[in-house]
Structure formats: C-alpha cells, structure tokens
Length: 549
Ligand SMILES: Cc1cc2nc3c(=O)[nH]c(=O)nc-3n(C[C@H](O)[C@H](O)[C@H](O)COP(=O)(O)O)c2cc1C
Image (cartoon, rainbow, N blue to C red; front, top):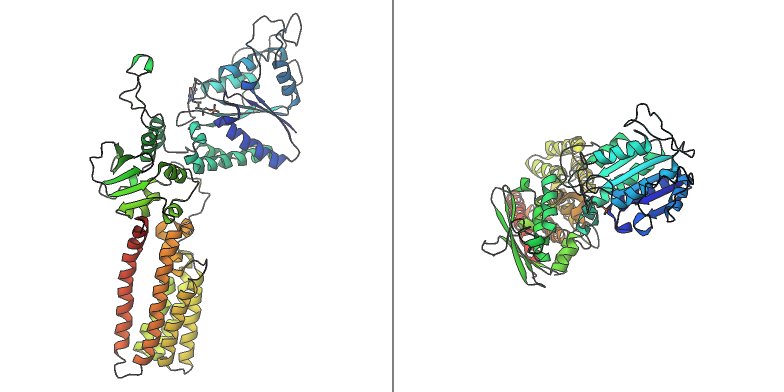
C-alpha cells in the first residue's frame, strides 16, 4: 500500500496538524502491515502559483509549463493509493501555498466539460489518468475551540476535488494545544484516538465511537478560550491601542503562565468560600495571586489579597510539573518547592485544576472504577471483638455470619487482599473458640494477628494498608504513585499496627486480672483516640513536609 502525506502547514514537521497526521499514519501502518509512505512538505517545495495559461491542456497536454516541484507531486499523487491532506485552517480554508498546489493539479484533468450528477456545483472535468480506487483523507486543526461550523470552505473544496462522500475527514479545534507541553496529557489522549481511527480506517472505516471521541473538545470552551487569551501575554484592554499595534504591552512570561494556570481553574470545585493562591516564583522574583471564586478565577498582580496558600517555587520547576516532566508530589518531597499556609488546596489540587474535561458527551466506554471500603475489612473484626466479649457462642456465630455476608457488598466495592484475609482470619478465630479454645487466649491472638497484618504491609516498596483505602479520597490509583501520600500512610499504618500489638499484650494480662471488664473499654477508647489522631496527622504531616521541614 502506498501512502502520500501532503503536509500543507508552513511549519513543516513542527505543525500541530502533522502530529495528528503522524498518529493516523501510525495507526494505518499497524493495521495494514506493508506500507510505503512518502511525505511532501509544501513549505520545503518550490511550487509556484498557476499562471492560468491552459498550456497543460492545449500546447503540452498533461504537462505544466512551469518547471518546479509540482511535476514530482503529480507523480506522487498517481503513485499513492491513499493521499493524506494535512493542513491548518487559514481564514476558513486551506493555506495559500497548499491552494497553489491544488490549483496546479490542472494537468491531471482533461479539458472537456462534464456533468457531475449529484455532486457539488455545476460542471467538472474528467480525470486524465485512472484514479479509480484511490482514497483521500483530510486532516486539519484550527485555532478556535471547535472545528464545528468552521470547515464549510474546506468541505466545499474537497467535495469538488474528491467528490462528495469520497474522502474521510478528521477536523480538530484547539489545534494550538498540541504544541503546549503542559497539555500533553490531554492532547496525547486525542492523538491515541486518531491512531485508533487510522487502524479502523484500514479495517473498514472510522467507527462511530471513534468519531464521537474525536468530536469531543480537548478543553471546555471557556477554559480553552481563557487559556488561549492568556497565552499571548497581552492585556485585552491595552491591545490594539497603539499605532500598528506596536504599543501592545507585553506581560512577563511568568504572568502569562500564571494566567494560563488560573484559566484551568474549575469553578464547580468552589468550596463555598473564595481561596487565594499565591504563586511566588523565587528564581525570577515575581509573585502573583490567583483568586479562586464562585464565578471563576482572577489573577491579581498587586499583591493586595491575603493568601490562603502560598507556593514558593522556581518558575522552571513549576513549568516542569505543569508539563508532566516531573511529578508535583515528588518535587515537593525533594524540596524543590515549598508550600505555606492552608495545605488543603494542595491535597485537592486535581479537583481545582485537574481533569477539566467537558462533560458534554459520555462515550460510556470506560467503566467507573469501584472504590475500596475500609469498613469491609474492619466489620468482621469489630463484630468478633464486641460480640464474643458479650457472649461467647452466639458472638462467634455472629462473627462467622458477618464474614459470610461481607462478600455481598463486593458488587459495589472493590475488594482488597486485606478484606479477604480479615474474613478468613476472623472465621478461623471464631471456629477455634466454638471448638473449645478459650476466648481469653483467642482475643489477644486476634489483636496480634490484626496488628501483624498492618505492620506486614509497611516494609520496602509495599503499599501500606491504609493507602489501599484512603486513596479513594486522593485521586484513586494515581495517589499510590505519590511518595508523600505513601509515606504518610506508612507512618499511620505502622502506628496502628503497633497499637494492636500493644493491645494484644495488655489484653492478655488484663483479661486474666480482676479488672478484665475494663479491657473492652480500653480497647474501644484507644482506637477512637487513634482515629482522631489519624484525621489530624493526614493533614498535618504533608503540610509539614510541604513547608520544607
Ligand atoms: C494566517 C492564519 C489564519 C488562521 N485562520 C484560522 C481560521 O480561520 N480559523 C481557525 O479556527 N483558526 C485559524 N488559524 C489558526 C490555525 O488554524 C491553528 O493555529 C492551527 O492549529 C495551526 O496548525 P499547524 O501547526 O498545523 O500549522 C489561523 C492561523 C493563521 C496563522
């Protein structure tokens, strides 16, 4: 199979559109196997405008009088089974240089008039060469937030060129995002859809599902437009006021970057009170405040607001984090930046600035991840400890019943290894007591087993037990990559483990002493106090690390 890519962007390989085209061709290669690809960048070729002399029809039929690279392009067009037209949208049509190339295809036509029933316009010319079986793909990006409604001119042109319905299109708005490293996560996803479309194109056509995904906006309209406006570093009020625009006051790059960051704020995450985030760029000694309010964000340059959270960072570090080159949490652990004031904003960063994907269309393709639930792990133990201390036999039977019933909630929750182990251990202890082992021996052993289970999850690179459950509130699986999250959970898991080892020891003695009735009380009060400590520690410790302590 022969594929010809005509890259009509003046930027050549640096073109946004070319990224989509490359992804598409990659998909085609995967599906088609043996493929030969020729790429022609219009910006590097010498293709002069048509002179309109018709010599290619009368004096030298099939041959243009201009000697330039267009002769090669015509050879390529005849060679190709699939031609991919790749270009940016310029003034709602193709860029001028590409239009020259399109005009210069006249030698490929015969001069005779032809009726084209059911086709666009009135009239056409027959092809000079056999073009049957050749296919065309038109890929383009544009600068506005959507491609919808902006490609009428392009459709009209290619309807004439290829015949209506005889070509496949991928038109994408927000094209400039493809060159923004900070957006690579979002644009990368889009590019994998294009690659998928390339595979499907070879296997019978782009599916409706892929079409739907390709039509989705990369960023919501208002966020994209705010980001795009901010990227120029020019204040709208000052723009265009000077003679020839030369007086347009350029903002500092850091301020433009901060404005773009502010534009990503999702006002839906407003917590009921305004938050002031202060960004202090230590290397360039610039400081800006972002007010995160109910109706959106606002960047304040005069420092008059009172900051709730202050981030002190070199701009280079923050840019690398934004571009996904380094993880924010890792950078914080390494002390590359510091956070002062309320740390809550950092914990909920993704809610405020994260995945601001438009909620317009649901592909329904990605099933929602089920959450884990620590209660599933705890309930068998609590039932066992409470019920057996009240009444031996019924308590054990109740514990076994609880263990048997817990799996019923798995249809709504994701089970962890610890849920399964807890059910098995509690069943074992209950059966042992029913078989005649004293509960005065079994209860301390159960505390010991519980503590060991927690401690065993702490060493090395293991994910500490609490992290399996608390990750639900910190971005799910992604939280497990966060070293600070893991460290906080490791400390907590160890403390809980130690608490239950200690509980095992003092229960053993307490239960044989005259004040054995106190053991139940102590064993309830201590975990409750530990629970309060856990809630406090989960906030305090990351904030302490963020302050650089
Ligand atoms: C001269 C010029 C005209 C443009 N006209 C439009 C336009 O009419 N509509 C639009 O949405 N974007 C327009 N754009 C934006 C480009 O289509 C957009 O930046 C595109 O992603 C560039 O793609 P490329 O990197 O492949 O060249 C224009 C850009 C330039 C430089």
